[in-house]
Each structure stands twice: as structure tokens, then as C-alpha cells.
Length: 120
Image 1 (tube, one colour):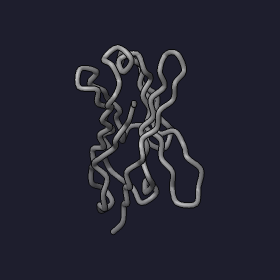
Image 2 (cartoon, rainbow, N blue to C red):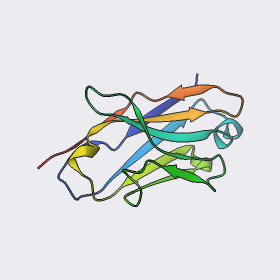
Image 3 (cartoon, rainbow, N blue to C red):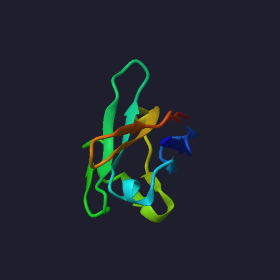
Image 4 (cartoon, one colour):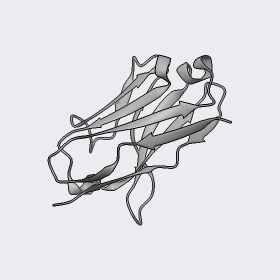
């Protein structure tokens, strides 16, 4: 059974950095390395939104305008890991952050989410 587990969330003050991790299990190296990986977030009471995604080879990334220049998505296929480095955090970044995998044949897998709260 394929599974994604996010970690690294927490309560932080504005301006600091956090690094989220997403660990994939049950994926073969091939299936993971060929998956497009994404980070989404869902603020309380709002819809889930795309934060960033990265292609299978890691050669192309895409970011929501509100995080461009502050967040960086990366992946280590050999470890079946995806990361989201979040710098200069703002209160409006507060949300549950989810990892998502889309296999090249279409299978979609979501993680359970990790809470990030930015507050002074």
C-alpha cells in the first residue's frame, strides 16, 4: 500500500523558517521517481490550494505566487523524499500542509497533512 507521511510542521513566529518533509512508502523507486510531487495547503475554513510542485526528474518546479521567492520544493528520489523549505514565514502561511503524488499513469496519493502555525 502506497503512503505519504508529512512531518516538520509546528508553531513558529513570523519571519522564521521551517522545512517540511514528505516520506513515501510502498512506492517502488521507479513509481516514485516518475511521479509528479506537490505540496498543497489548506487554511482553516478555506479550500485546499497548490503551493508548489516538482516534476519527476526535479528539473522543473512551479510555485503559487504568494510563496514565490520564499518557498523551495525539492526531492530526493533515491530516498523517496520530498521537501518544502519555507523561509520568511508569514501568519497567512498558517495551514495544514499536504503532500501529493501523481503517478505517470494517473494514480493520486495524498498524505495526512502537517499543521503549520505562524503566530507571534
